[in-house]
Image (cartoon, rainbow, N blue to C red; front, side, top):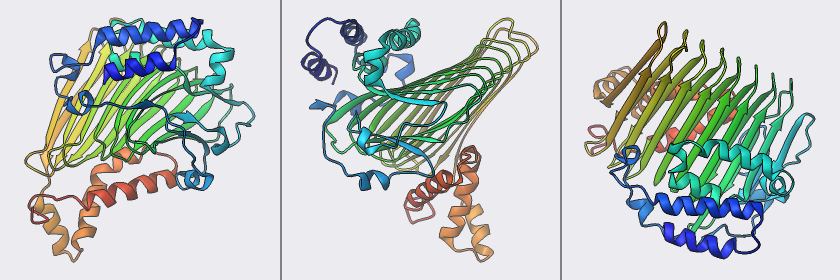
Length: 428
């Protein structure tokens, strides 16, 4: 895969050595030096790599005709929709960018007008050893071309935004970036949706200023290989709620890095995965309480059947001096077949006194007695299963404030769940 993408890179970005081109060349060189991960890498130890190593995408990005009506079918709720098709931003398929106090700019435009701004933001992440040696983070930056920059001015509440990634070609590998900057007391809600197959890499960068609030939801419901990375910095009394929802991927790896830089900052990070066959969901979460009196909550859940696999590695870092920290982490996995597997790696690094830091994990099977009890009260089997499934997923989905979006995601989840072969319940 890496060799193929390096060849595509040389074809696509050969030419005059502009500052942008030099930046891209540095990142493709870093990606080649890092190489594809192996099981010897601790961060990839539990993650099956065959689906990645066998990839040979024959193109990066692909132009195709898509109608506005096709895009409209994928709209979720009352949102301003911005569409990417096979990795290309399509202005003609997107809503108007006009909104007072809110700027939504294509990354291609920003690279022509404010490249230094983008370069400094990306480079600030890659200065750490962990991300500088990450092959996929470097590949995403090497293909620095497509994406969005969302900026909300002070005291402005933006209309909800949907970023649609629609892939029609399974042989394509796409790389996009989303930059979000909220000024003091701004408020924004962003829904990032993924439809289609292929390889999809999305990097998100967020800067949340004093008293600002951001909700960021990722939702993917197709058999794709998707590797996400998210980097967020929160200033005084800022709030972030981020949710990763994954239905039936080939592989989804979600890397989330959150820095609570000033006191009073709060973050809720959650996720829900529904997996069958040999599907894989991998959540790698890192929250750093750099400032005192900050709060963080992590809640990640998986429902697994077939030979599927979930991985959760959650880290909470509390350095010396971060007194008054309140941090909680919880991972729960519902296993519906004997061959499904859940791997959990909680990490607490506490170097300060007067803090509250807890973590928990649970891996269990579906209890047929609960189903029997509901059926004995006259509730049909499918309705009883729906009640039990809702009880498991509610505390994740209830964090979604838009009721139309929540209802749509819940319906899709339950539709797939009821098709599962639950051992002991459906004759499996």
